[in-house]
Length: 168
Image (cartoon, rainbow, N blue to C red; front, side, top):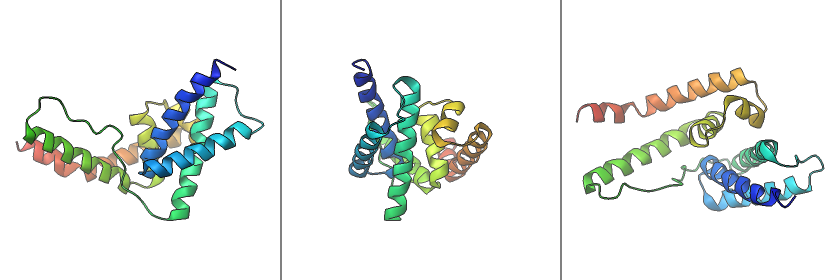
């Protein structure tokens, strides 16, 4: 189990990023991940390690995040987990980059949670459709169709940015 400790630490970090992206708040995400980890470690059927443990922990964090959102019945803007601007970029380019990131956070936050979590798991965390289906306990085809609809909604919400960039 000594090999599982560094692995669990890595999974906790990834789960925290996932929770922040779902909840939009670092403090709430830390609370959710902490409670999820306590639940996971005390559960009799917790996977021993590897990808199964990672997927299982994502599932527990996801369910706890949704419960948290329902309990507080509010949508909080998505925090930018990596607010970085290219070194040496002009102030104008930095401002444009920050504005685009802000619009993306707004557009992601406007998505229903069942769409947002798909975009986050696939496009931010790079999980496969099969893994996402297992994490969310839904069919792979459902993952693909919901992700398609979520991306269309994002494209629509961000279409003004594309038009502005095309006019420059």
